[in-house]
Length: 477
Image 1 (cartoon, helix red, strand yellow):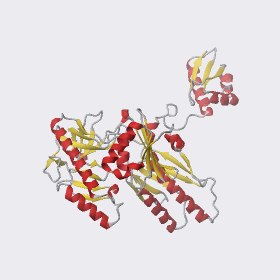
Image 2 (tube, rainbow, N blue to C red):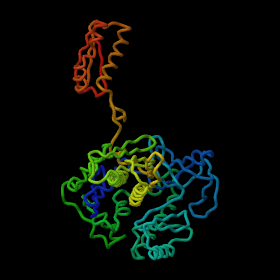
Image 3 (cartoon, rainbow, N blue to C red):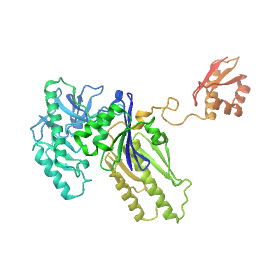
Image 4 (cartoon, rainbow, N blue to C red):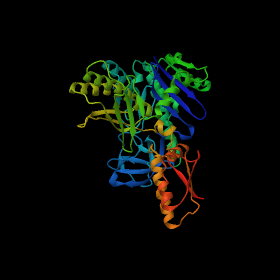
């Protein structure tokens, strides 16, 4: 059973996909920090970097968008097969955001526009028709292609989504006509609007859920907000009236807690993930990549060593692919599985991961096993991940995950006092304030006895909860 649970509040909207009691996907959106991905802007070129074949475009946001232009030329109008012209400073262009800003980097933009619908994605600047690779039946692929080709203008393109499979022609045609109307409105706004203005905003989270997640294998979508429930029902009546019965209004108190989502969310903040067999994963992130280590833990198995290791690695692979989706980990990922004895087992593990990668909405590529026995994965990242939205850097450890040990603190205090005493003797001694845990451990060490003998100073230890772990306050009496 696969269900979608939607929790709507004025401050935040959350969506969870639960399959057979297990959390499989999670998204959240806040009005004050809305994603830019999918938005279409009329922008003005501010700078052209010929060496990087790129330009920076002012789209009216805090940071300019980075636009890769390849050979340095773009279409002079927003149509496919139109004449090409050089990019120049001050030129107005229509761009779409494909990646949110990250840290000091601004958003990334493209001239290859796409407007997604429930069954198809309209591409105004392209002239080809593509079909989702998940639609495997050749006759169905050809049927959908013929329907779309007859409706889409020759100078435009379209991608047929998986949700179109089995849909009657009128549903697909209605979707295309709706997207064509949106495109006409975008062009009209572009002519009338000032430079650096928003032409089209991608749908909010709830509408994207209906568009992207409400597929044939979903049993029900449950919403805890009456207004949003009505809005979704009105949309479903137009796009896919045959699935209206799957939309439900939740009448309980806490939709996430009552369906086990809250407990699963708490597990996402830790770097260790427990496996049912007793093994566990350790997930560590660096600036350039994410590293995942597979450990046996308490799992000993009931077979020979080779089969035990293989079984644990398969279980770990399933959980790793789930964690990549839940935590929205992107970029380069290296996984250190437990070494297996045969090439056949290695191939089976890679094949298992490739099968799971197909289910990921973000493009995920299982590259291969490196010479060091590490599985290399690449995963596309476009939006800010859940972790960056839920958490901020710890002010104590500054993101390191570590603070000075009590012994190291004592050594640091001694060094500080020696430096002070070398300049001026504190006859009345010092007061040292520490976090209670560190204070208790340092008292037991008698770390300052040598200082008393050497300088004749008294050091009074005080515990204070206002002092952060790994830090101290030293004052003279």
